[in-house]
Amino acid sequence: MLSFLASAANGAAANPWVAIAYLVAGVLFILALRGLSSPSSSRAGNRFGMLGMLIAVITTLVTHDIANIAEIGIAIFLGGIVGFTIARRIAMTAMPELVAAFHSLVGMAAVLVGLAAWLNPGAFGITDAAGQIFLASRIELGLGIAIGAITFSGSVIAFLKLSGRMSGAPILLPMRHVINLGALLAIIGLVGAYAISGAGGAGEGMLVVWITLLAFAIGFLLIIPIGGADMPVVVSMLNSYSGWAAAAMGFTLGNTAMIITGALVGSSGAILSYIMCRAMNRSFISVIAGGFGAEDGAQSGGGGEQRPYKQGSADDAAFMLEQAEKVIVIPGYGMAVAQAQHALREMCDLLEEKGVEVKFAIHPVAGRMPGHMNVLLAEAAVPYDKVFELEDINSEFAQCDVAFIIGANDVVNPAAKTDKSSPIYGMPVFDVDKAKQVFFIKRSMGGVGYAGVDNDVFYMDQTMMLLSDAKKMVEEIVKGLD
Image (cartoon, rainbow, N blue to C red; front, side, top):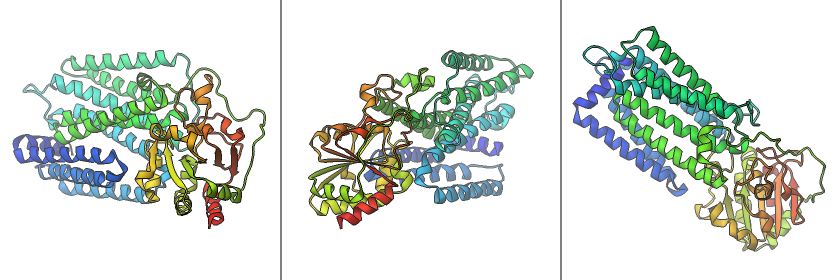
């Protein structure tokens, strides 16, 4: 396999058609990102990405001259079967943790490729006439291993938190920022020491080992202090890390397609993280530092004194929805868990038939990864022109008759605007408190949002709590509208 990778790189340098094929693949990757920027063009974007990857893989395969093509074919077949099976079986609610798991695989792949290149540099064509690894290749190896290890361990923690195998609450270590900064500086110093080290031996080997171990450790340390409310940004940032790891390994392998793909994923992930940080009023630098969503103070929860609230039925909601002129629907993770998106679309179709204007409001961090709600609504064939981002629709709540909240919580919590002690303080939220009537679907009053804080919207005079499974409640409202 190592000889295959090296010969592929050499083939790309010797054959201009290989370089052209990689260029075409790179252009298709760019078109894929452009297509994914809008729900209406996302299918085309996916197709461009698939075609670009197909061209890149085939080009790499046909440029081999030593590797056993049968072994490579078997590996691709087995990996494809695993990926196809997972994609067919995975529920949309589990998509965030699946993405985190895939990021961990990319990170580990970068670590393994980097270690393989360090152990057998001749097969990768990164040595000079004396058999010494080039200075630039040493830097690329060190950075690739470090970024890959950080991506792997950080993604493992994100997967455990998102899947519920680990508490979503922040785990705060004493002097965590000092520890993180010290570990990061140590990694940079070790990479520099490795880059200027001599002819190898045990000393050089220990440098590589320490780079790998410290990078694995800092990945854990960066993610465990981060609370659940900020996890969508974590997923986006880990996506960026995985791209930079792939780009670093692309330089090591001399593979243009890997460099282009990694740079595109890394830069787009960083841009998305920056946009999401602005949407949550978070510091972008704090994302990289780790623990940006956690404070050392106590976190408020939902276990305090019981407060009075109004509870309604599906028939009550159906009657009031029929009388409304404008309804804004705010979906959240609870809708995804209940798989209520199809029933919700049916309800909205019935309302529109009765002359009610219906719009959907999507928060940038609704669900547990970027775009989670958009995908679910697209799956239910909700027209794209009815779906609006926070900044485009927030001013309309003062003129709407009903704010229909289905499974969302933190993104409508006014504590983000008023309570400086809240872990979500400063995060822009929907102004549902300005609506004439609020319907809030959740399973029970005992639960709180992913951030673990109570919500004053539950207890407002104009709020009617609809306590039930989201899908069941919406289906009952649909029966009331018929």
